[in-house]
Amino acid sequence: MAKEVSNNSGLVSVIFGILGLLSIILTIFALTAPIFGLILSVLGLVFGLVQSKTHKNNWSKAGIIISIIGIILNGVVLIIEFQFLSRLIEEAKPAMEAARQQQELLSQYAQQTQ
Image 1 (cartoon, rainbow, N blue to C red):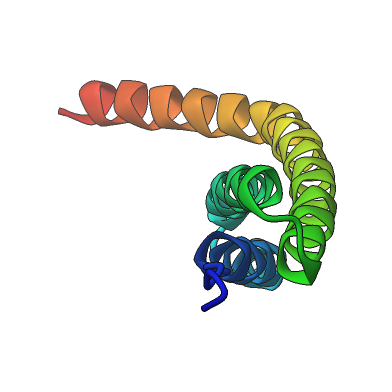
Image 2: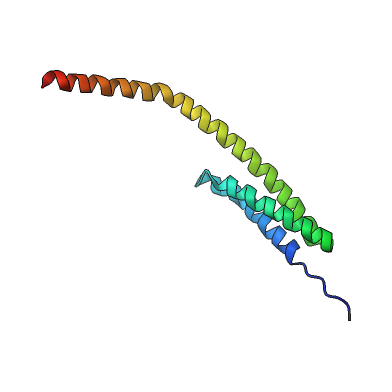
C-alpha cells in the first residue's frame, strides 16, 4: 500500500490566503480588517511552508503564492489607511481648536451673565 500524504496544511494555507485577500474588501466596513488579513496571510504562508517541507504539492504552492499576495496587499492598504488617518487628524486640528475657543467664549459669556 502506498503511504497516503496529507494535504491539510496546504489546504489551510489556501483558505487563510483567500481570507486574507477578502479582508481587503472588508476595509470598507472596518479599518482594522487589513490587520486581521495580514495575520491570516502570515498564517497561510506558515501553513504553506509547512506543507511544502513535508510534501510539496499544488496546494502548498497556491497557498504560498496567495498568502504572499495577501501580505503585500494588506501591507499596502495599512500604509494607505495610516496616511489617510494622519492627514485627517492634521486637517481636523484647526477645527478642534476653533471649537475649543468657541466653548471658552461661551463659558465666559455664561459667567458674565450670571
